[in-house]
Length: 117
Length: 425
Image 1 (cartoon, each protein chain N blue to C red):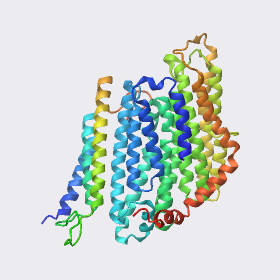
Image 2: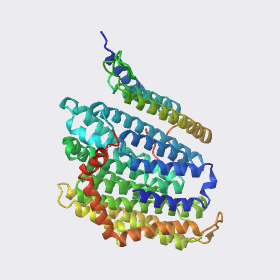
Image 3: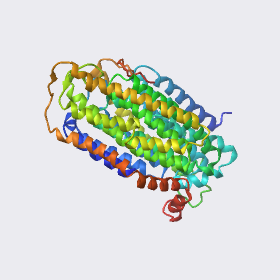
Image 4: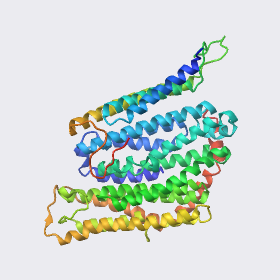
């Protein structure tokens, strides 16, 4: 039987693998998608770092045996906001680079500036 | 560090209000945000807050980076953003790993908890610590991940590049903070792990940066590679993790920030006056203010390459002296000295092409746009003046920095100050 930990871990692994593959592509759109996938993977990973718990209350109750760790959830919330803003920024910049230079390759064919990623 | 940021920020701003800020919107708010992020990253005592402040300074730097526009600059900006987003993801993973095994993110608290981590969780902790080192290395432009810097800095607007000079230092500062306090002596093998990777990587960075200086095809690229090289020098000293080397590293950090900032501004002075030749190493007629700019470039280059009498020389001397007894001393001495020579050759070549050989071409390039000419020179001159002050007052500064590094290597004082008061956690 598949445990919950196994499913979560393999989900993170698949998201990260797909994200890294896409980031290594030469055009900006796959790169943006890849970054989005990586940030999702990171968010799930952060969430899992508080240990997976079933049937534990997140808020204080008098009859609770234990609680789900609230701090990773707060961290994930912050991370989601930041990564969302970042994705918006890079979409705008990619669009502008495309409009100004006419193609959407990530590398720069200019003397001295080596392409990265 | 805050004083350093403020000083650099002030002079860069002085330079920027002379025209650069008019080329695009929202320059000043972004500039202040950037300063906020940098100061926050220096001040924070919490790992996750460090991440948040990194993001603040990065978001602002994205905006500043593409300030003024231009196809090439925007594309370099896209690369820069992609690079840093990947870096941020790695940072979060590292934070998650460290939290999962220690259950805290407060730096002082971490310092107490790290030695107590169960043996089974050690591997996770090591992974987290090394990933964290990788992230800071991205910021500090250390070798396997240094390739974003020359492209970014050479294409960024000059005042922004000058401000970015302190951004690499944020990475170095974070390495110093984390690996003396959290993964310091008490952490056992984790601390040693960082030093093992840091020193060779820093040496390679140094060589690569200075070779880049020699190979650069424009002044902006040359200064960018010089920044990479100086980060190499700095991190060699940091990687030693001894109080003496650390104070030398801090002195060199002060110096290299100011020198890099001044040089980036000088590059812009040259670019503005050479019209279509911009800052490439090509023969072009003389340009106005040539003599004065040549003079300040000469001073800046002396500082950057570490020749006497300016503070670069003292900084390198302190670093070399501090690691005289180490096992890797031969490598460090050999590489630091030979790369200094390479850098001197590189700067001499660039300077003579730009300033001396131009006299063999007839005519004078007309000034492109007139404005207040004094302000840029004032700010460049003040930055160089700070270097001179740093040299003159090297004694008191070194004493102060030695005290600082003593404190860094005796983290119990800091831990008590944070946790003893009961203010946090």
